[in-house]
Image (cartoon, rainbow, N blue to C red; front, side, top):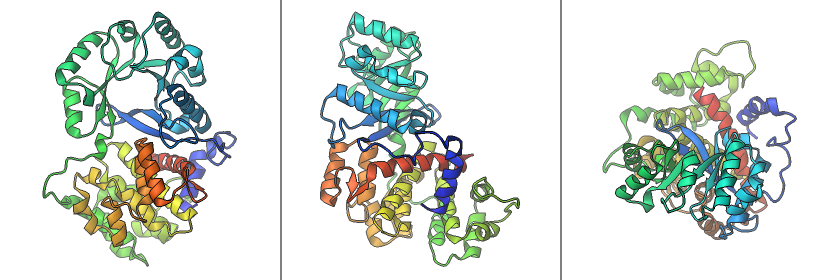
Length: 437
């Protein structure tokens, strides 16, 4: 564990010293995969997360058993802790008939849980009454992949959210579905938002919540290069990885960006470093915390600045990727500096709206690592590609990466990647709070 991680853990976990859900506590061996897909609002802020999962501890792909899948995600939310899993934001959980009728969902916190009624269910009178009872207990309801079929009106009248799949409907069909929702209080959620064009279309049609990975798919303009006002950040990323660190050169670069200067000094003067003497310059910050710590702070602050006009979820994802690649590399005895940077830089095209082909040549990386950023599934990129599939709950693709790269069931050798992913998520949440505060 690095110094910065120790400091962040001290700050973020201190109030939960005796909490049985603490990340340092032993976790059951049956812990399954859980991926989170964000749901964003009109301001590109994360409103909540849908919990995605695989169906059992021994299967790398969803096996089609919806009841088992629902039980799995509920069990995992209990193991991981609801607050820690989604940082207190609403969690959307797919629910089968059994889960809604049998009381299984009562294991979840009503004030934080949105129960998704699957479109494959039959809206019987018994199901409607069960949903009314769950609403009375404080749960919210979402109609998933709403298609406006006959018999669904009673559920529309009590739904809090209605989700419509962009990829499965035409503009005319969506207009008709919105008409069926009518004057009821349900918020409209557009699913499968893959680009900002999709996002703009959904907003124009009256949707207020958006689900998908559109913020990771930039509008790439042919011939577009790195914006001039972002080149300084690329230069900083190059400079901070030089050894020994050229303090004056790095300080000059950082000072060229006032917001970056503020972020670095804000972190250096935060409770992470117990001292009564304020740091007032970049040079002083380096003296106080040392070269390695300063490198990490500068890298995080730089990426934070690069993503300043983007959804904060993009920053969180880049931090999760960076920490995951770092921890996994450390666990196998590798130098973790380059894997950390690889994970963090992997979302830079979305931050800059520039293709990776235009960015990679300017990055301080070895040729093989650049190839990994460009999508090549080589030794350097295996952890990143494993994680990218995990983020999208693409279990079959993740299994193929595992097979090709020799990664066993959720492990690299004897290293449990699922647990490393959870630790990376906890660390990233703490870091986001520091960087964005």
